[in-house]
Amino acid sequence: MAGRFTPRPRTAPGAAPRTTPGAPAGTRRWTPPPGPYDLGLVLGPLRRGPGDPTFRALPDGTVRRTCRTPDGPCALRLTPYDGTVTAEAWGPGAGWQLERLPELLGGADDPAAFAPRHRLLAAAQRRRPGLRLCRTGLVMESLIPSVLEQKVTTVEAYRAWRLLVRKYGDPAPGPALDSGEQLYVVPDARTWALIPSWEWHKAGVDAKRSATILRAVRVARRLEEAAAMEPERAAARLELIPGIGPWTAAEVVQRSNGAPDAVTVGDLHLPGIVGHALAGDRDADDAAMLELLAPYEGQRHRATRLILLSGHTPPRRAPRMPVRNIARL
Image 1: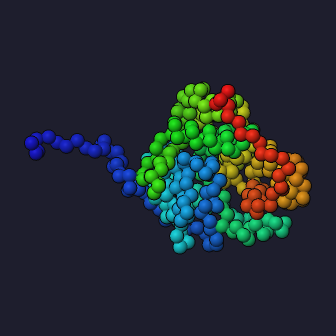
Image 2 (image 1 turned 90 degrees about the vertical axis):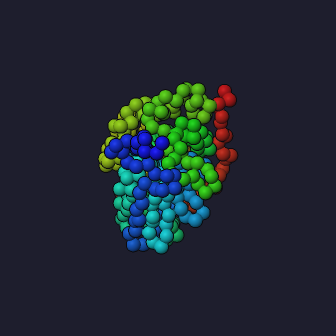
Image 3 (image 1 turned 180 degrees about the vertical axis):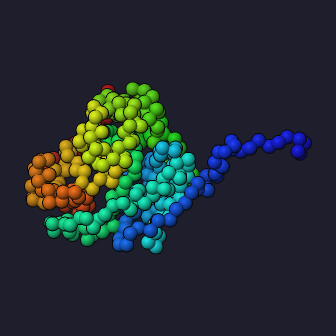
């Protein structure tokens, strides 16, 4: 029978060749600017809890991350070694992500623009000199988990994110983790829009937050454009969506735009932490926090990151907020 039939091509004419799970679609090596560099610290804000199905930080310093780019899903393996970071990418979005790798890894950030004016911040900067602010260039992957975190405990928000992404996301391209665990790529806008109301409820997401996400995914393309805007304009565009306020917008542009001055106002704990660290005032409100951060205008987000990294937080005066489970209602 040999030669009687022409073998079918494995890919359509003009399409990119398929790759095996172990072969990356592309690689790139990037050298950070001179000075200390901490990959885990740079990408840490992208992790939504220890069980985030889109992110893993491994004991050897390697970071595994997935994302949904305009070109499609992408999985990254980032390995720091000898002053460089080697990136291996799988999936249709590999080229898009590798092209923007320096921005993701904080290459567009300028830590020298920050001048500490408090001893605590100077000490925190000395202890954690490898801090850089990442810029993903992707809005929805930060917006949806930020909405899930509105007015609930982080335990509840992380659980909802984990359940929804694992159920409706796509298995990440490329190899699984060494443990055999599978990472996932966040669902696309259409998939988010088609999640039934009872699945939101089972994940512990109330109607207000799910409705906000549904309004956002309907205009996902327009919101993604905000990643190329100045942070103030980007936040203003996000806040056009009912249910998205200054807190959520700041949480998004800090990640999508790498905004060094985006302050998270409206947070339950942050004003007290900043007030306690800089003035010994654990009862500070948003106005007092902004007044204390005024000397760092232009770098206020970096200042709050350093305060949080310092560990100088006020002692608890009350029990933790109870973790609700609305799925049982």
